[in-house]
Length: 111
Image 1 (cartoon, rainbow, N blue to C red):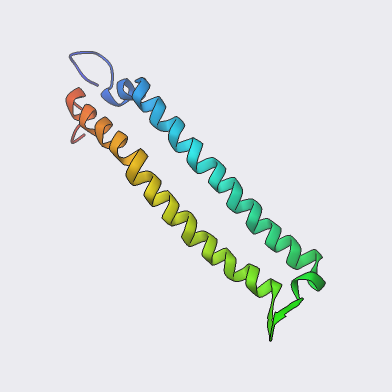
Image 2: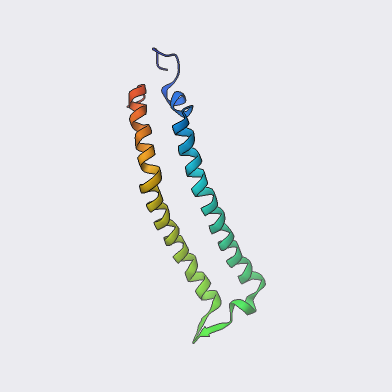
């Protein structure tokens, strides 16, 4: 507790509009991206389970649609990671840093 104000500085920071905005932005990016990835992943699993004929369709030589979709799962993971890192560096991290500095001003640093 901050003896001068009687309010925990972490709770005090959580109540600020800046913190709430940061939370909204984070959720606004991460939740849709997670929903997209999980949908894509379960579509792949369901297609492999219930549409084996489609998934085993040859595209070129021994390469079939199932193999391509499986490899695209890895590609999607790397793309999402890249997009998140760029978004975080541009949008999230500067705001989080500003809130960290504000936390220091409220007396929460080093607790």
